[in-house]
Amino acid sequence: MSSFLWAQDNRVPLFVFGLTTGVALTATVQYLLSSFTPPRQSEAESLLSASNHALTARKQVETATQRLEREFTISTSMLHNMVKAFIRDMERGLKRDNAVMKMIPSYVVRRPSGDEDGTYLALDLGGSNFRVCEVTLKGKGQVRTRQKKFVVSEELKTGTAVALFDFFADCVGQTMDEYHLDKNASLKMGFTFSFPVDQHALNKGTLFYWTKGFTASGVVGVDAVKLLQDAFKRKKLRINVTALVNDTVGTLISHAYVDTATYMGVILGTGTNAAYVERIESIPKWTGPKPESGEMVINMEWGAWGQDGIILPTTEYDAAVDRASPNPKKQSYEKMISGLYLGEITRYVLIDLISTGQLFAGRRCQALEAEHSFDTANMSRIERDHSMELTDTKSIFEDLYAVRQTTLSDRRLIKRVCELVGTRAARLAAIGVASVVTKTNKLAGCTVAVDGSVFEHYPHFANRMRDALRELLGINADGIVLAQARDGSGQGAALIAALADVGEEDI
Ligand code: BGC
Image 1 (cartoon, rainbow, N blue to C red):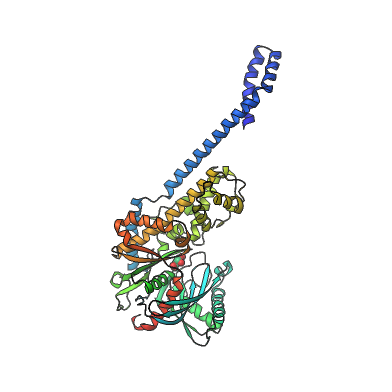
Image 2: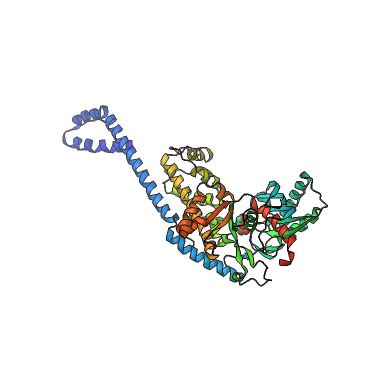
C-alpha cells in the first residue's frame, strides 16, 4: 500500500517538471528525490497509513459491535412483554394438547416428605451422557448415590431404537455387576428420559419428537418404558421400571427431598426445560382422578416456546442455526438458551464478521467453518478471560483454531460477541422462571432448583438471570432462590419410583 502511494506522489511532480524545464533538470530532481526524500516520506507515510488502518479497524469493530448489541439485547420492556406472552402460552398448554408449550401432566402428584427409604435403580438419559445410578434413600432427607457414567455415541443417537436401548441395558448389567447387585432381586427402577414425552401413566409415555441432536428411528410415538423393558428382557435383567420421568421433574423432586420450599426444577444444560407444581384445577385438560394433594407436577417442555415464530427476537444467526439443525422450526427457545446451541450461534456470528472483514482482517478460519466446531465451553473460557491482552482467547483462536495472528481488537470483539449471546440466553431463561412464579403466585418466595452445565459452568449466567429477574419482579425477585442442583435427575427418578411404591392409589 505505501509503495503504491509513493509511486503516485513521485509521478505527478516529475511529469510537471519534465514538461516545463527539460530532461536534465528532471533527472537532477529525480536523483535528489530518490536519494533523500523517499525514505523520510516512507516512514511518515507508513506511520500514517498504519494509524489510518488502525482507525478504520477500530471503526469497523465499533460498527459491528453496535449492530450486534442492537440485535442481541433484550431490554426490560421486551422482558415484560415476553413474560406476558409466556404466561398466555402456559395457559394454552394447560388447556389443550396441541399447544406450542406442551405442559405435560407428569402423574407425579406428591412431593417427597423426606421420610422415603429403600434402594432403587435409576437410569438417566439427558443428552450425550447416560448414567446408571443406585440410589439408597435413608429417610430424613438423606440419600446415598453410586453412579456410573457412559457416553452415548453419535452412532447410537442416530441409529435404531433396539441398538440404543440394548446399549442402555448393557450399561445397567455392567453397573450391577460392578456394584455386586443381585440380578434376581427384581429391583425397581426410575427412568429419566429427558425428551418431550406424552405421559399416559407414571410409568408409560410415548416420545412426541426427539430433541438435542437425537434422531434414532423407532422411538417417536412408542412407549419408552416398553422399549427399555424389552431390552432388559433381551439381556435377561429382572428390573421393573416403575416411573418414567423428565429430568426437570426429577430435579424438582430430588431437591424437594432436602428443601420443601422447592416448587420448580429447571435444566439449563445441553437442552433446556422446566417443571413446576400446578394446582389441579388450573389444568383444564386433566381428565384423570383428582389427586389427594390437589396438585400435579407439570413438565412444561418450555424449549418449544416461540416455535410458532411470533414472539422471540431471533436474529439471522438463530435462523441459520435452526435451518442446519435436525429439527428445524422446533425448540426455538431452547435454541437461543442451551449449551448445544450457544457456541453454534456464536460461530455463525464470527463467520459473518470474518466475511465482512471486521474480524481477523477478513482472513478465513477454516477450523471454524464446520458445523458445531465452536463449543459453548470455549465461550465460557473467553468470558472468564479477564487478562489485559485476552491471552486465553488468543490461545483458543491461535492454537485451537489455527488463526495465524489475532489482534487485541479481534479478541475484544469475540469476547463481546460471547457476552451478548450468553447474556441474551440468561435473560431469556429468566423469562421462564419469572412467568412460572408469577402465574403460580409464588412471588412471596420459593426455591427453584436449577441443574445443567450452562447454569453451573457458564460464567455470570446465574447473576445475569438474577439481574433480569430483578428487572421483572422488582423486590420480589429476592425471594426467588435459584439453587444449584447437581445430578438430581437420576436421584429424583428413584424418589419418584419410591413415591409410587407408597401411594399407587393416588396415581
Ligand atoms: C427436552 C426436555 C428436557 C430438556 C433438558 C429438551 O431438549 O425436550 O424434555 O427436559 O431438553 O434436558
